[in-house]
Amino acid sequence: MDNKFNNMINEFLANTDAKDEKELNEKLQEFIEKYNAGEVKYENTILDDAYELLEKAERTRSKAQAIKYAKKSI
Image 1 (cartoon, rainbow, N blue to C red):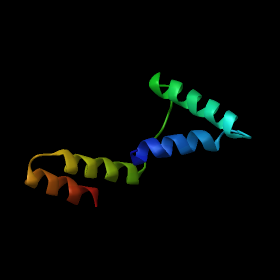
Image 2: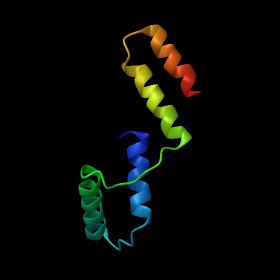
Image 3: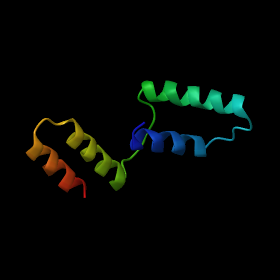
Image 4: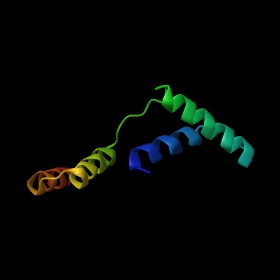
């Protein structure tokens, strides 16, 4: 799971009052439905941006481009 998605779930669940596993699962289902509908609002953190650049560095085929993305993430 990527850092941004993990942060989105944590932020969503922090604003819930789930009392047990059943309620928590219901809230997770609600999150997934809202996420898929584009209704979850989340603003990237600096760390999210850095992780996205590192993921780009991992996926690129060019060594030079990978180094560029990795340096930019720092």
